[in-house]
Length: 237
Image (cartoon, rainbow, N blue to C red; front, side, top):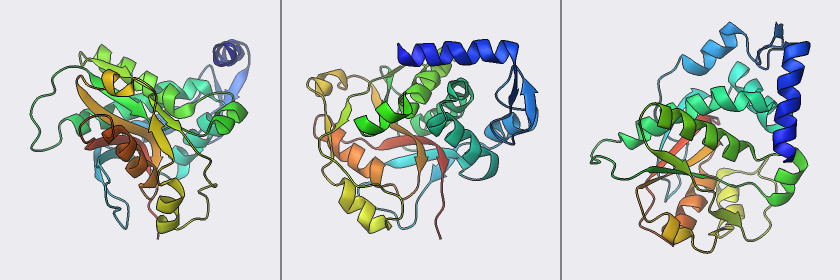
């Protein structure tokens, strides 16, 4: 209910008051993004992406956008500042990445629905933000896929089973160690995931540690998870 109320407030505010573009900050009316920043989210075709180094156990990841400039600003506005209307354009980007993942070379046609499994954040983080940004974008992506005629659903079957440290500032190896064994599927999750193709989804990939841990947790319940899709990729030097 809190998320619904926040979204309603933003919709009403957009009708009555000018708003700034979440990407560049220029004033706009009844829109979260200006035309140029909206184009920045759709101007790149999804492709196979890798972090460096590539961690063992990482699924085949597909993404469309580099985490920089307008894309970074939009993701942060949605995640940290509760700009919930941005879930729709970000969901369109994620849907394109999911379609690319489902067409991964060497795979046969998908039978059954595409099941999008969001990588979870800690409960305290979700509570602090007032919403779950990855789940919200995944739901928007699933709606986009269904409108295009591709059966899709979102199953939030992953949970954190222990506390983890803040990932900021950690090396790739430290992130893997920090998240190792941190996730588990909810009771009955294996049964829910038994049908169709499972695709792990996240808003951002940096080192791939979160996707590795999510794949491990899901693979304990069902067959190995080999596909993932993200909105953006942060390339580290």
